[in-house]
Length: 320
Image 1: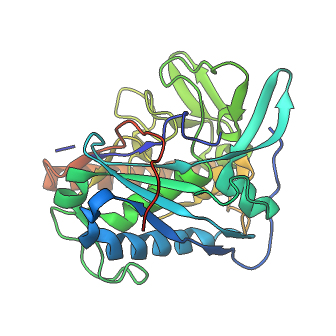
Image 2: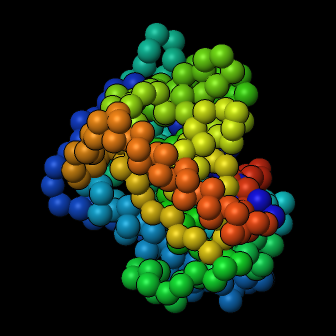
């Protein structure tokens, strides 16, 4: 069955035009206290795995970031969500463009400024589909080391949590996913660098464009992600952690330089500069990735999971 991973819809997101330059320094000092909204403890057997994977995925991202924050994570379970959702539960205003207010993800705002825009309430929300959790996700016995083999039929939970943290910090916005229109007078920093041309979405942040060799294709209908199936542009991006097309079962996904370039473009304080290979080098790498992806697909028929679906809701009273 094809797995699709969505960002939390705009009603739950903290939606950034002033760019913050990449910072250089030690890795971010981030902690991730986890709270569960699970009346009756129905999913209690999964708590330890969810906590360890949340912390491991957050730690993996923090190696590339700088700053300090305690990001309180609220985890919910929803039978109506096919896979998983993730996002920030607050936003921070960073500027304006005419009548448009430009805002950044709340997690990024706290990391960048040291001020929690959400006060004592949760900063981050993850919503896990009940069936996806029980039937598809494989929890690594050591999510920090990631040395065990992912079962052929399992979806790597670390890859899912890494993906959702991508939405928590950067890959989120308020544009209509099919027309590119903004809803009124608010836009995210991701939206600021998103264009809609001839029926296609592209990310146009300068670091990402330099790294990719041109505007980066975003997923039509799910634009807070990279890539598309042909004939739309971006098939070479389907192997990326932040793709919006599919996750391949039995496969690990890792943070890419292109993911980090987007973080830097939208103002997330990053530790190191993103390398900028030549267009031809990128073309070769993209072609190689596409070939590998096609070979994987031939061997793993029926093992893709369509990336990112479902509808988020506001959290009920949290409980541990």
